[in-house]
Image 1 (cartoon, rainbow over the protein chains, first blue to last red):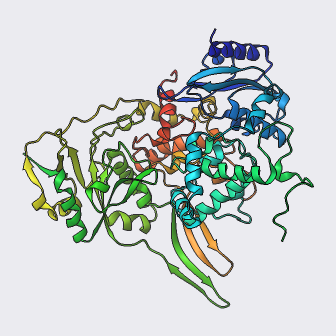
Image 2: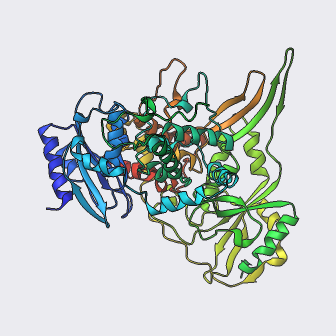
Image 3: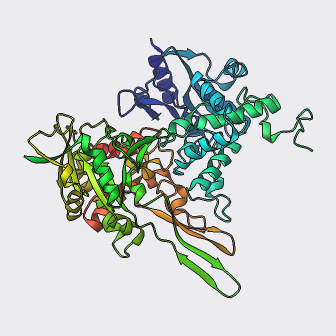
Length: 276
Length: 337
């Protein structure tokens, strides 16, 4: 039995026994190369689940949307390592109770699916331990190095051009599992802190506010980057913020589900270079 | 014999139009994104794109538009109305769906109040539509009773020649006739055949859809919850739509001075209908998605006699979770009656 069939039948069994109320996985998309999120609530619906190398999106965003887990019931979800990393962060930030999530883990290697053993977040400690030594995808690394080699003025010009494309559709925020605020700072209008206008300044404000809020929290899944309809290379910003946090605090977001959020915790060893 | 614009005369055309005081905007690929932007020569244009990622709507109803500049002093309030530039513009190489989008929005912007910002730009613009030579999996113009060579919203119609050497060119409005007069020496009479128009399969039955939507019993249907479960509530589909036209008014500045702006808004956002009290009549994503579909295929039709969709397919093409109008309308078409 292939992994897809194995996970399908396990998902169906979990649903028919009532152990989980929902299975979040993938189904066929509108074209041959697309997969879309699929929500299976019955064993029959679980038969439509698809698992192949086109299943690249990070579904954890649905765990924190619309109060899905507020009834205390369990859900099952298909996650690859970046999704598991996201879940670690969500658990460490007390947004998800790990006992409510059954994981169907998989990795995509050489365009093939490999199952990851374990069903609860504690079983995937090995994934977390690899984050410290992992290297970013070559394309990200290369582009990040190109930007870092630029003068500040050139880099500013690069981001000005990129951010001038932004239309403030907030697809980046909505696709991101870490953007779970019930009311985002840009939606606060009494008083209004951040301009809602989508001019270059307003776009800078939005994208930088989001980058700061993600510092030390990004799982580098690339969901924002893929969601952006105007192709702003958002993962480069998050990559850079991750690097800053790593250098300042030796911290790698999502290593484990019990790590303390870096910007919400204090250690006597923290560098104090900002104190003059 | 028809009039043609040979490809090798396009640079001369652009020069002639610029000399006559026009800016020429065309599909371009810049900074990893395709959109309409000003061009100086034919080689700046990306005319082979099936469709630009962004629509020409941006140039008629921009994402943010300053309306009034104001200054409040001890005894007076000074205000200055800001109007869009009056520059004459040619939009060259507009796809029929995008040109139709403008025509679909005209009645909305001219209904109870004539929106000067829209109509000033409409009146200073000439739309040169180019018939499609290719369609992709997301194109659905035929499903909304348009076609890859529709002249709706066009002033001039171009049909690519089978030879690839240029376009059949025809004025379809007075404004179009006037535009062609400025370049008539560059046009030629020819018997060259136009390339075949691509077949775009009908993906849903819009009549059936409209009938279902018009039945009040379906407003609270479980269908809306099921079809929109994966919607993450971003505004990508609305902001890339050639006909979506909702906006918000915002004052930007401090206590004493500022600018009042008209900013795009989206029915996908929870904040769109949030009351000051905190009550939200559309408090779930399913109710917001239903609004989007109802607005386009029921309310707009009731008010203006046309559906607010030109079938470009961007809502699905660029959706982060592979949703969009097509799937919903297909599902409605196939519902048991």
